[in-house]
Length: 211
Ligand SMILES: [Zn+2]
Ligand SMILES: [Zn+2]
Image 1 (cartoon, protein in one colour):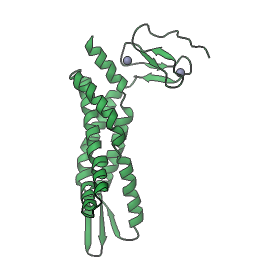
Image 2 (image 1 turned 90 degrees about the vertical axis):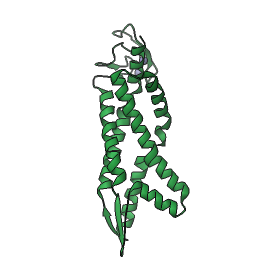
Image 3 (image 1 turned 30 degrees about the vertical axis):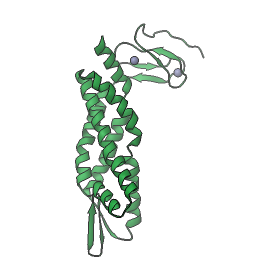
């Protein structure tokens, strides 16, 4: 395979192809192009669509869903006269009372604190990057986001909820509440926000505002 560099822009930053490690120049323009690796054809950057705007919209939607997802009960379990409806935090509280301290702590951390922090970081990064303001904060926010993102485990928690529904459905009178749908929506939007987030786009804006 020949490493042809024709039609590549003269200035800009160098980046490595994720597939074949060929170094290519990135155009100076931030949006509106798609760069394919001249060697292997891998799409290195695609800025034809507004990725930052997508991340902004998805993280905002997820943050809005975060409120009902955590306030509305996810499911109600009725065993005899003892009806009980729970939210994520009430679930953690029950585990705490049952002396499953570590489990309760992990639920609060991975299903509440980290996702909330992640979404707030994504929203503030994208809003500030769009406004070209607060670049110092943006740089640290991206770094913090990249460190904590593996600690958010909404999907694991969602899976746990589904497993318990399947298990309990025969044992108890189980009512799935609106909170579950909000939680599902939250999971979808936050996954979309994380998937559409392109830190490179942010670094480009940071560079741009320095000139
Ligand atoms: Zn760059
Ligand atoms: Zn390549």
